[in-house]
Image (cartoon, rainbow, N blue to C red; front, side, top):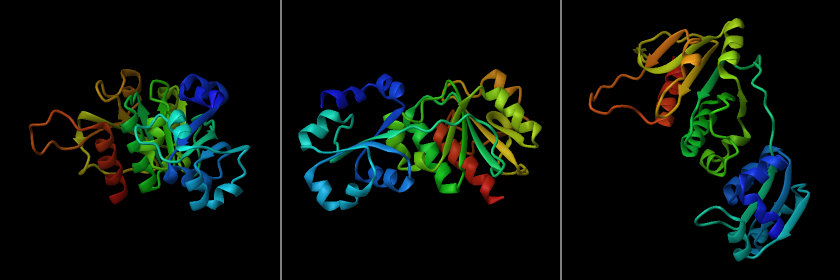
Length: 244
């Protein structure tokens, strides 16, 4: 318990190249994903209800009391399953099979990040490239909010402006979500393309904005709200590209 409790601190997860997965739903997603599972802790109740845990190929498997799970968990109401899963490293390089890529420039809120990954999963967007200033996709709150999307999305961290230039050289149109852009609903959708979503408070950084070919905005029909939540804006814009 003392050893595993150390993984409540993100620096220890980063040093070991692992991340924490909690809850029955997320455990099921992890098991289906094929990602390497290092450790599983579950209560007797969960072992009995989900006997496939015994065949998951984890390096370490423990039966734990609910009190022990609570000591390991970072959730307010933990369920009876706690896992350590090995991280995957993505380098941001262009993947030939990706006609639509989402780029995140400095997204900070873990809930937003997780919701964006969930939106990508819904629309089949498999490639997300992030600036180094974007919150880690392995942050526990991101993992939980993604509802399993973390296991089906290639998330990479890079020097975003340079990576976008590389995409542009391969024929991708670079679109950015900005308040002063053209109507996203009326704009012609080009493929292949990248859509950039900026920081919640400051938007897209100047160095990334310099690479963007076209600025897009969601019309403020109500005229009273100053801006949209970043994850909501991402969902609206991504859906628009897939309606075209």
